[in-house]
Structure formats: structure tokens, C-alpha cells
Image (tube, rainbow, N blue to C red; front, side):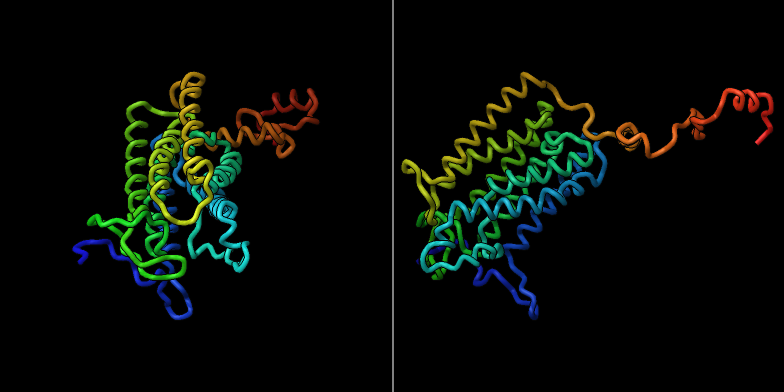
Length: 315
């Protein structure tokens, strides 16, 4: 008799009339909200303007969702394009299947576009958002719980996850790898927050620390999973991805610390600086002005200027 275990929900969707409310989607949405909210607090603390993080997230989040789904579909193509499978299922994102590697990669492209439009450095924005992303992942992993997916090997530990019989799964008690990763992501977020305060990380190093520390946990958690995956030299593809990204992140931290020590003093230009930059880029938008702010006429002659000086009351 099983004394203790983590139950799985009987369904991952509740229908409110014709509208389906999916647990997976809610976890993703809540995670994005937390990441933007906390990222905004960190950005303002760094000297940025409130709302900038959300403005750039408008670009980053859609790109990230597309990237995450593309990575999943490409690396697990057999689930959608092999014989007997329906390729239309590749678009059913609500059924689960977002690869964090693709989400971060393509999300960074969207963030770069947003940062470029605002004239701010992408590394600084990424540093501010790094722990928020980890918190978002911690929340988003509970979407896998709703879908009864991404669990580990069978086990009899008290915190085992009970899985019910279903498509492509067998009933039993398994390691709750979704919970392991959720807790690990919380630890990653706290580590980045502490390290950022202690060492004043800048120029993308806080984000690189998030990547490196997440990859450490993802590597051993991935090794525990039993869902179908491609293997290279006996290891799951995502284990190799974790190893590669960990090495790249550590290398970035070391090299960046030597080339650009310290932290950015200014992370976002002021409104006045942006206006001056725009005027310098497109001087034809307005006539030159004097110190009083009145427009100068390039056609005015020296005689007109002298006449104006002799007659100060003359309009």
C-alpha cells in the first residue's frame, strides 16, 4: 500500500462553457508575469525606467514562445512527422512541448530588437531579467504536472508522482522531475540574486550565471527522465546541450570579467538624450534653435540682425 505520493490532476483543462481553461497555459502566463514584474523591479533599481522591461518583453515573449516550440518540434520530430502521427499536432502548444533552449535563443532575438529600439544594451536588460526567468521556469514546470508529462524513473520514495494510465504513459509512481526542476530553478534565481548583490555583476554576467547554474541542474534531472528522446553516445540530447551551454556560459563570465570588469553605470538613456540623438540623426525634422529656444532663420541677413538689435521693441 502506498502511504504517500504526489497525486496528478485528473484533467489538465477545465471548460468554462465553450472556453477551455488549460493549466499548462496558466502556468506559462503566470511565469511570464512574474518574470516581467520582478525584472522591472531590478531594472528600476539599476537606474532604468519603469515599464521598459515590459515594453521589451512584448518583443521577447512571442519570439520565445515560437523558439521554444520550434526547438521541441525539431528535436522530437518523430512525435509529429513519423508514420501514423498527425503533423497538425505540432501546432498544439497547449498540449505541452516548449524547449527552454529555443525559447531563450529566439527570445533573445526579440529582446535585441526591443532593446535596439529603446537604445539600451541587451546584456544589461538580460542581467535584470535573469532571476525572473528562473522564477518563471519554476512556475512553468507545474504545467507539466497538469499534463502528466516529463516524469522520471519509477520509484517508491514518499514524494513519488502518481501517473494515471493514458496515451503514451503507464500508470505507476515515478520521480517528479518537474518538481525537481522547479525547486532547482528557485535555487538558481536566489543564487543569481545573491551573486549580483555580492559581486555587482554586469555586462551579461548575471544572465550567464543563470545559464550555467540552470544547466548543471538540468543535466542530472534530464538524465533521470524516461520520456522518449534522441541519444548521442548514450546520453540524451538535452544533456549534451546542457554541457555545451554550461561551458559557453562559464567562458563568457571569465572573458567578460577581464575585458569589461564592473557594471554598467548607465543602463538606459534619458528622454533628453534620446531626443538629442534623434535630432542628430535627422536634423531636417526641425529648424535650428537658439539658446532661448526660438527658431533661427537661415535666410536672415546681417542687416536684419542689426535692425532688430537697434529696435528691441520691433516685432
